[in-house]
Length: 484
Image 1 (tube, rainbow, N blue to C red):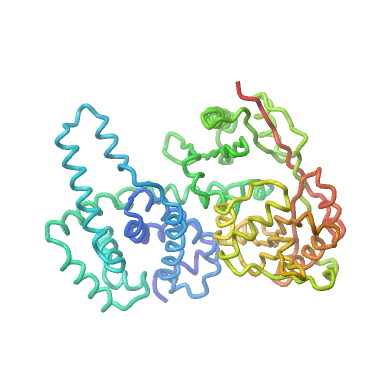
Image 2 (image 1 turned 45 degrees about the horizontal axis):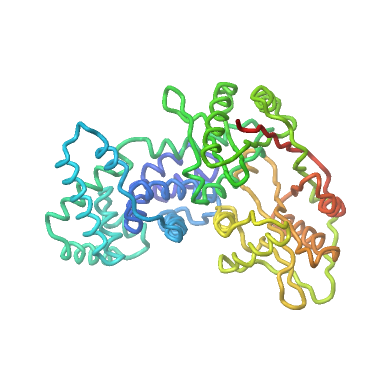
């Protein structure tokens, strides 16, 4: 077994600190591959970081450790595809805008930098896709043709041929400019890229065991990061040594602030800073209030929110749980109804429409549903829908298993959430049938516990869950403060 395969096996067996070496080895590769399509280095770095996080959380599913390069390339490709679906108009690179604003830099230098940047982009864009990938990978990290071959899952001879034809198309001066530009911008020139990824992963891993399932969990974060607006609405906190100690993000749609603080850090001080930042960011977005949530047994956060003038709202989320060792009711559907699973992303629009109808809101979006379907834990065979005799989708339930959270807690728990029924098809036992089916599927996958969530005001859902054996385990209360 080669060194890489041995490292992957050790990571899969719990030596997660070794993942930093994997990031170090493939960071330039991932960024170069993304840059070949996106033509934007910062966006390429964001995509690569998302891919490393996604790969980390699904690495236990990799059956052949030696196949990691090609497997990881497919994850990067998926992230690129998601980004290109929602590309924004091209912007002047940040470093150029900063230079333009600086009175210390001559206009001539600025114009020359813009010209070189434009020439490089035009040269790269002039190449066919396959040649563009090879050029970016070959020059950004000085990867060998064999390494590029392994990453792209193509023969070395094909790499050589594409590299040869790409060089034939480009002028010698242009090749030198591309090499110099990519080399200067590759993430391995400093430890920032790797540190951001590993610190983000470590932040949730360092939670005490009784806080592992707090919101946001690992899958929640993947969903949130999968939405384009999240990146611009997120801020990271670092200590004096440059180590990440927390992050905060806002959602203007719900006037919501979500934040995480590293265990053992200055909770009150950092929390106050995050709330102040969230307040200003939400005000700028037009919100009139700031809202956040907290488990009822999280005394530190309750004290922080109370000190900051937040007041508890009547809206409460209830977390229910049941053992899968107990008998599971047999699913019972009305005649002509069937339970199927989602085929893939081509079904996303139908799922969004059903979700909106079931909850009577427009809150679910295509972007967020796609983000849910692109997490490392997502399994389409666990994404269930009830189909009516007329062929309509009338109820849904997404089952999921977070291997990372289970590894941290030592539990084997799966989740049945979200769950909903179209208002025209309620009171027919569809939700109960979905829950029973989901329970059986989770048990078949080796889970010992099942969890679900609902609001305290949704009495019908709570009663349905209890009818198949669920009981309330904990509650999350929402807190709110008006913005002056």
